[in-house]
Length: 166
Ligand SMILES: [Zn+2]
Ligand SMILES: [Zn+2]
Image (cartoon, rainbow, N blue to C red):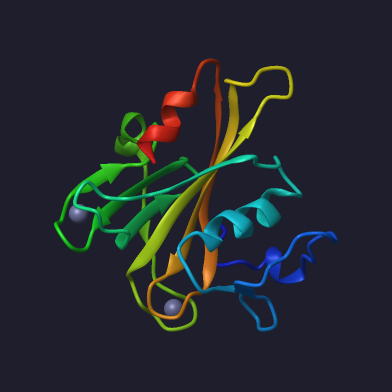
């Protein structure tokens, strides 16, 4: 279970990327907007399975603020909209939820439980539609701290429909 960005606090991005929106000066990376989860996960995954696709979670009601539960061992995550209460299993999480012991997101910095959620996907090199791995990232709605609560193997051909199930 990796909560917060203990890996990334030691990561320095390779030159070329402009991270004007992300403050990396403190113990945790802090993003100024929900979309900063994408840059964060790109850096986070660089030492694992580098991600090239990203989707930000948006509820059917239009809200981008959720409570997030995840089990990094089982590889599942569920988000619940704080505005309308709708719960949604992220990608293929519903299939494995019954075996999971999820933890609820609580910010390491300010203990807020509301966050923005985004998922980054790593594809197989030889297929543009086969997904190897995904990472569930979050940004604290209170203070902007970025983290990755869970990541898991997908290993599916023709899996781009998962991009619509973030
Ligand atoms: Zn909603
Ligand atoms: Zn916070």
